[in-house]
Amino acid sequence: MAHQTIIPSLRYEDSNRAISWMQDTFGFTEHFVVRNEEGRVEHAQLAFRGSLVMLGDLQGDMHDLPHRHGSISMTAESAQQVDEVYAQAVAAGVKVIQPLTDTDYGSHAFTVEDYEGNHWHLGTYDALAEDQGDGESG
Image (cartoon, rainbow, N blue to C red; front, side, top):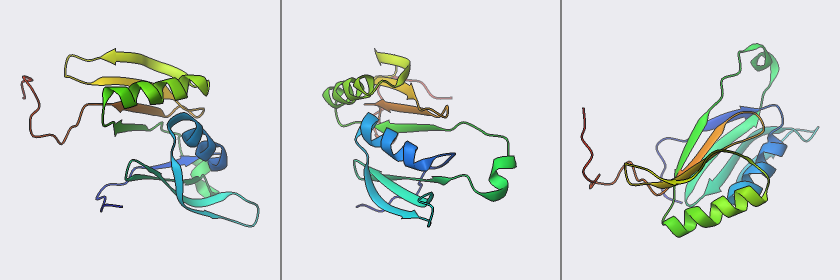
């Protein structure tokens, strides 16, 4: 796996459920998972197309913190891949926030919401691409 300099991290009430959701919805695979004696997730790394997302169960004082929903954006290799993953997500019964669409900035994309309110976006837009099309900055 290539070196990833920024790794998104999420906390869940039930990370085992989150892992299953991510696998069923997008096809994530378990890269590394540590569970305690009760089977709760202490730390997990899930892989998708060469990148990682970390997650774990809320623990101790974390339950007292106001819950802030996260947002994860992922880049697909092609519009066909977006269509395939969208079909997989819909078949898994997820809540669709933004159905498949072609954006003004050149992405073929969709957004879904997981069971704890985090938004997951998959599209063809590559924020690191050198050619960003005809968009204006500033």
